[in-house]
Length: 256
Image 1 (tube, rainbow, N blue to C red):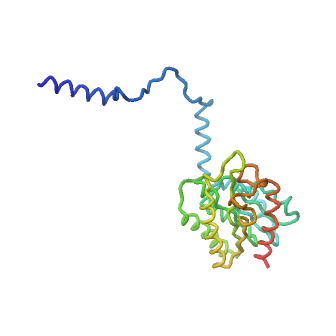
Image 2: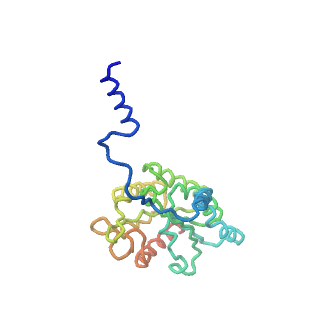
Image 3: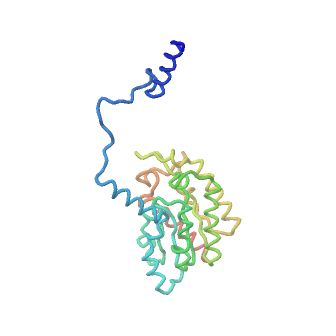
């Protein structure tokens, strides 16, 4: 056998087993891996348990049972949404109103769609006001198309209308980069505007009420106005104070 061939073959084998001699080194001088927390098996079990309720039907289960045991209140309205709704103190903002908060932080429209019967329809409200979509744009539950988001909103609307519930669709709110947490990368204003344009058109075509938070809260840069949010996404009290009369006007228009 040709000695040159043997030498070449040995070099190829060595490179395949140990990498090219000019490749960057993988062996480190100091062992400094990311620190693991205590009891990883319990963390894994907790994550597995949470996945069993990925749409968080358990969040409001007890309160839903309580409300269903009572006579339905006249003018009951369910606020369906994500963290912006979740953090809204409805009883403080709308004292004496039979408004029910069913917002869950981080949720997307696909999760809300699964919650429609237990968290909305079963409570027999007169109306449902929906503020959703910002977390879809942020890919909280994975990549989505505009059509996938709108299909979920359309399905929620169809279910509500079939149950005699008035539907109020709210525009996705603008975000900003004014605070330390920059929001426009995960929630590009152009995507927000696309979804809002569809929602406004769909509401008009279906005879739904449309509440335009975006127009009231956006500044000349196309961002959420400075001073009404601590993180560029969630409204502070000043922000909720601006939203409340818009929501109330939308509810009254839907119920008249």
